[in-house]
Amino acid sequence: METPRRTVLVAGAAGAAALVAGCSNYGDEGGGSTSATPSTSRPETTQPATSGTGTTSAPPESSAPPAGEELAKTADIPVGGGKVFADQKVVVTQPTSGDFKAFSAICTHQGCTVNKVADGTIDCPCHGSKYNIEDAAVVHGPATRPLPTKQINVSGDTIVLT
Figure 1 (tube, rainbow, N blue to C red):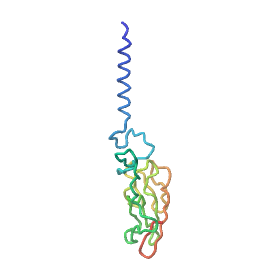
Figure 2: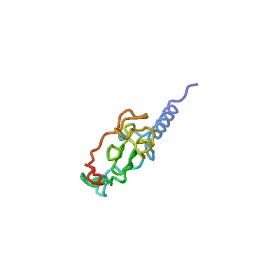
Figure 3: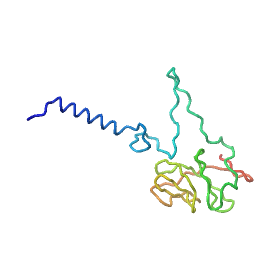
Figure 4: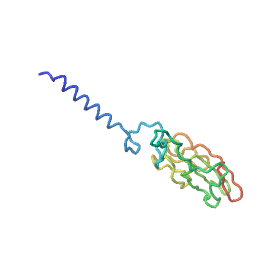
């Protein structure tokens, strides 16, 4: 006995709808997302707001300090360690006394924000990548590229992101 054509079409449409629903990223926390933007360890608003007239307003201002604004005091950064400034997307380390380094806090593996500096490494909570506090070289993967360098200026006891 042959299957009626209508049954085949209805079943195919239902399967396609299930496939599309399964691939959608509505309410998704990173799995199955088709976005070209890497996911981060904290939610961010990147879509511009729309008004009732259908026009778009400017996206919210970045929380990163303007160039030349104080980021931290030197006493905030422990020798042999560092501190993550998630809002500014930067991590500052002090590998040896008086030697301050700054790197992007965005993991080069999949774009998560690193969350701590411990035991001589900058650590990413998402997949376990670790970077050296001296030069941000990969110490433990899955990341394969070092964290990009950021420019800072240390003047007296003040660290300025430039």
